Image 1: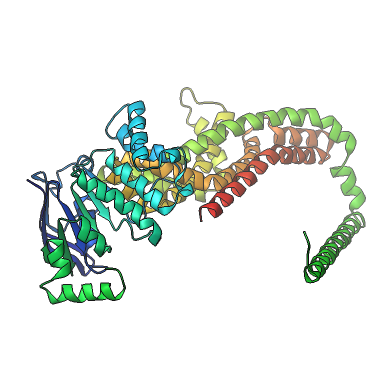
Image 2: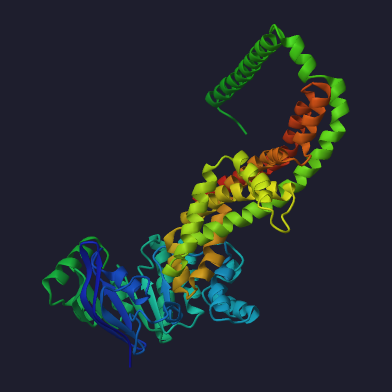
Length: 247
Length: 277
């Protein structure tokens, strides 16, 4: 079943076209990896899906509902979508536990006690139970990012958007975050992730989408797009990645 | 611990430097202090000034009345500080509201901060304390309340701008994170933006409160017998300015705890920022 349907979306910042009639479908339980050079539109696309940016044309449907309709309540749409950012964006004035329970308590109107219990269960799962009462600045980047993922997950999102979630991490901390995402995939979470980790995209994605100049230039199974790309631009991009030792 | 000769020589050198610094500081302080004392006490009018500003007898006589007046300043300060901080926060939040419905609210809040940061406090006190009773409306409060209102309205405008600076200093990525969790704009302000903003601007807020504590003395212009007015009365009785100095000393003593708290909060904020970096 189709969960997310992006249809000919345009996004313009000033005179530069960031998304150029981009179309992309994501099925339930599917993991889609967006790859492409910086400025190819990966982050903007994710921000448009989460309604942090307004599209300039085209439609985005979530579960069949046109969420780009200005009459739609954006807060209600965002409740169904989780998002994790490159720079974690934890709230520095709250403990780890308060970061995680803020939305369940304030947005989803759940009682504090069960929300805290659920948060602690999650923290235990990802090995951060002892950090529950710490403030974010006491955590390593990898720990912060795992908390940020938990913060999105406790709201039971239909869709999880991951925006280069390992790009700000030291190399030795990337693994712990990727392991967590791999676990989520095995549980059936639908995810769209913008990434520079080609090796990881190959392992975890059902579909790899190569963006170039705000368009989908090539899309398909990871083995095909990453191993035997059709488009010359894709080949060029991958060659540069291999040169940099990232594949 | 065994220290190499080189290191021992360095330690000895640093110690010599430290002793020299202390000596230089002591000498320069003594010289400057002596010069000041000589300049003031050696001046041709010193004897007259000493009797009209530093009369211990008059200081002792006027002290109870001035202290009594100061109690009014203290109460007025507490009430005005709380109200001015609340008003400032309210205005700052109103200025961030978006959407066409709020245009008049935004415009009025902006005009308010422009107007009351510009008008001298003395004029605001005159307008409130003498202008409002002139309207002869039913239930017009006394001059003390009106004078206090003038202080609140003037300081509210300054504090609003401090709060607004704090709100604007919270990084947009924090808003993006909050909104993407499904929090509404209001919830985002309440739980994510304001707590960070207030923490960040706590030192300048407290500093404005220190300024308020002395400007509270200006309500004496409207008539209530506070420390300044009590000093003025005592001055008029003896034709001697010593009571004003008594009031000044008391105001400084009143400010000391608040200044100490401000310094402590500033230091703590600076430390936290360094720890975060």
